[in-house]
Amino acid sequence: MSSIRDLLESKLRRYEELEQRMADPAVQQDGGKIAAVAREHGSLSKLATKYRRFKSLVSEVAELKRMSESGSQEEKELALVELPDARAKREQLWDELLSMTVGGEDANRTRCVMEIRAGTGGEEAALFAQDLFQMYKHHAEHKGWKMEVLEASPTEMGGFSKITLAFEGEGVYRELRYEGGTHRVQRVPETESKGRVHTSAATVAVLPEPEDVEINLKPDEYRLDKFCASGPGGQHVNKTESAVRLTHYETGIVVSMQDEKSQHKNLAKALRILKSRLYEHYQKQEAAKRAAERKTMVGSGDRSDKIRTYNFPDNRLTDHRIGFTIYKLDQIIRGDFQPVTDALIEHDRNELRDEMGGLDT
Image 1 (spheres, rainbow, N blue to C red):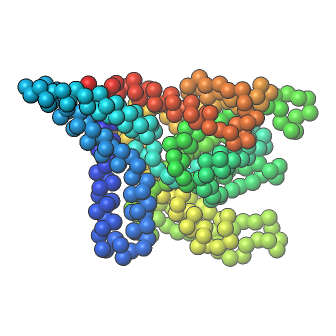
Image 2: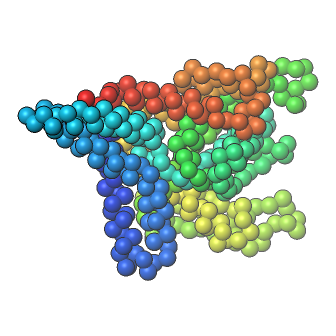
């Protein structure tokens, strides 16, 4: 239980620190800074206030237990009446906190960046990357999340060799974090004349998008190169230097962006992706340094993991990490994705509950 308590304590401390920063006149006068601070404060609010209430109930239960063992008959009777209700409320809050903590310290982030890349399988893999994009797009619409295409590299047949998306909304990272890894598809390609089933793949990476107050990226920490965006040729070639490439000096991480005609917009998008990759880089460094890192609940999120198979002939989706199979692939690919996410979160919640055990009586 200590690892969960440690995490919750750190979130509460951060929440209270942000409360103080929001009251600082210097922060209030800086529009960009107050917006970033308020956004992070808001994202932590639900978890922090619930944990604050939980701590209050823990103290209340302890006090009622003391009273139940008191020499005063009146105190004892009062405590024995109130103790079951206080314990039940504490247990319920603890269960809710476990659910909110599934996914680790980034679970409650409301913004993330997703990169989908075609893997093995040529054009069929690119078409599958397009299917995944549509699936996540429709899922976001069902959830009421905002989704933005940051970068896209379409192929001739309508697929994507790569597409980068930004999501924003309640519970967005808790759900989408499970998508990181290799997705395998088995189906008959449109170009297959003999009706043979082919296997191809696409990889997905999901990165929590940090707030500006967490990754304060300064211009002298990266190199900015400007160049002309490549186009189909002829009169359509962009003759202005609207494309940008960012190279982070310390880590060597490189981000290029040329989707927008405006250099300013390309730079803004590139910075968002660079900050997300830097955040992921530093988080991995920290995780490597911790000798007793908390056990990862479902998979490693590594891109080499084959996390899921989409079998179109059988209308079957199988998530290999938890042995979950559902015969509604046609509905899932259209965006009815919640059953898959719910199964993964429930598996995590049960493992976390088993690992942490119950509360003291």
